[in-house]
Image (cartoon, rainbow, N blue to C red; front, side, top):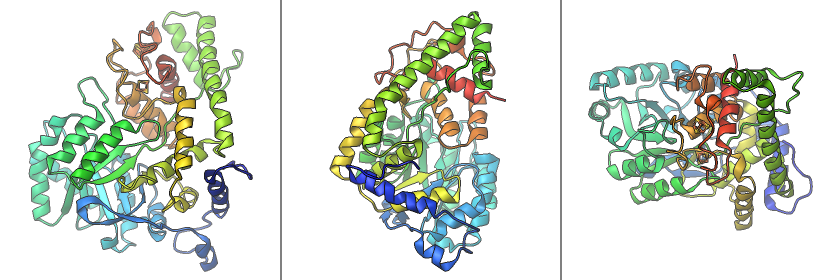
Length: 449
Ligand code: SF4
Ligand code: SF4
């Protein structure tokens, strides 16, 4: 991480110290590092009560697709005790990894959650069968929580098959709690995150919520947190850093594979090659201008790269006591080492205010997770924040295959409606995001062979 050695804020000083932690990266398999190395390693410092589950959860937790088993064991060895997975992550491979790691842990000391997408056609038996397979992959006698994965509407919360299965599983001692996750609508007939999760928190049958929450767009998450607090529901944050799709500078005579694909699509949609190149160059210039405007602020506060911003964004979430744990998609041991020192750390009011200023300075760079503000302006009903979330999986979480597979699921194939659209969505984003340019760039990224 690139940080300043002199700074004006404690954010900078703390981050500079963290660089030492990053340099002392993991050097071998978990559990076999030398004692003196282990002494230097940070550990979780803060545990919070996970709502009415009563579990004392580490303020930093681990989740997401594609992890190797040793990563979970390493996290456990350093005090992380909440592991989030799902049936759909890596087609069950992620659950297998968690299951393998679990064999080396004290089961009672960790909280394991998994998720199932629930559809109207599901029956109690299909839910029980699918949960049984999750449990086999997780190699555990019981799962701590089963979430409805990305519940699309309030009515999904009433799915009788899910609740019937949960009741039986609890009675059998195979499941302890139920939860709901949501990161915004993927289609026009889906409802907003706050609407679904506030209803879930007030429903009484759900003990846990998994919430998209970031300093760039906290309003919806704050509504959910208030409802959770009132109903003593456990809360987990995800998608804590905003993502952006940055195009590399374009050399028209020697375009990158991604730019060449972008140009080809525009030509197929009826533009001349020159018009297509100009469109890309305009987008690059616009995005570079926004980055240049935000840069002095970032440098002043010692946040000089993506990773620095990611850590600061996590620190912002950790400062909110109503969010019980912040789930991070760690991809390697070094990342765990880098983030652990944030456990228990609080931001000062001045730091929070500084981040607020950054939110304004960098407003046009980021499409917000779970945002629906521009929905209704696209005649083709392109789910803007969902496409940009898949780009986020690609650029910010290094989950390229997962991102591309999710994007394929939207059914656009090689052609995005934006290719041949005049762009009536222009100006529809209250934060100034160039919707069409971002979608075109994301499509090029997510359809690379
Ligand atoms: S483009 Fe703007 S309004 Fe549309 S989803 Fe993204 S942040 Fe929200
Ligand atoms: S440019 Fe894309 S997002 Fe905008 S209105 Fe056209 S199809 Fe919809």
